[in-house]
Image (cartoon, rainbow, N blue to C red; front, side):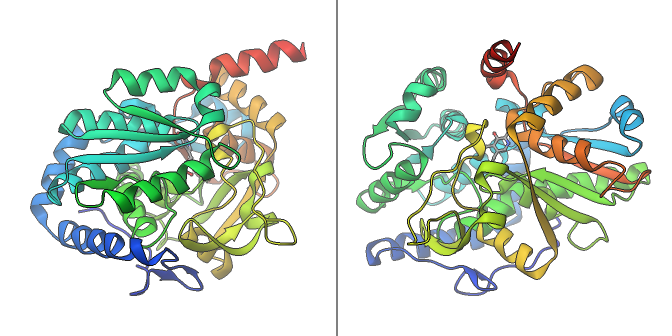
Length: 391
Ligand SMILES: *Cc1c(COP(=O)(O)O)cnc(C)c1O
């Protein structure tokens, strides 16, 4: 069982003043059923056996830790990477979707629905559904289906049906609304496979629990190396890869650092509010209208952040910083050249902060563990376009 060193939410699903379950009456039974099913499964060794076997034989776990020898020399610190980019489908997302797909079967349901922005969670959900023989419908803003046509095709190859969402700004937050509406109407045979540590209770807690395998493994692997990280750094969109690695180090002296996109920094530029069933930090105008996040990285442009991160920020246990598009592009190229790893644009935010702060906020000689949340293959066409327009 994964070692989790963070507190569970209270009975209402609150982490301090954040979290909770702010959903229409009609969705309460679905949330309660899911909470009960998750609690039962998580306490059941046979569920963990099955999930661990899937993550091992299908998902490619455990992922290794790589010492970044050349980057370390360049920066004057000791850098280690937790290699989620080597997991099946190219990121940490597989940990969450395999957990939720297995839970779907345990609940006797035959179909999963999912929301997706950039398409990565849709592809991961379609993958898990194919592996376990579940139906899969994915809701995606119409704007995003056009921007991410290749991911739409991937989902279709995997047997999923993609539904373009035409309400609101026709992007991720509208896709979440649509998936929740669909869940209400088909809750008897359908599970809503939410993609990050957000939404109503139990999702933030459940998704963090499924992602905590990252932190459990990393803690053990760093112990074996005899290295205690001074910093554990991860990029933050909704916050699932960060929550997963933080869960393994919250009881150590390590500083936990979440790196948001500068144009999507819910913690540092947002305010408390309610969206998508949770109370958290949200980017909003003075009148409380939710604002669209802006980032080079489609996976980080969610206007909110998971409630547990809002809590960890308010309690001071974790610190949230941001990285700008330009330094992110530089970091992506630096890691590619020095370490032979092309990271996802999301991941490059974490690298960018470490590169910027090495020798200043991060003292020389520090041990820094970076969660390499995903590989950059999906982003190279976009990066190429931006770089060629620059030169
Ligand atoms: C989706 C994604 C993210 C952002 O999601 P979190 O829930 O914040 O982890 C980060 N990195 C990669 C590679 C992703 O695919």
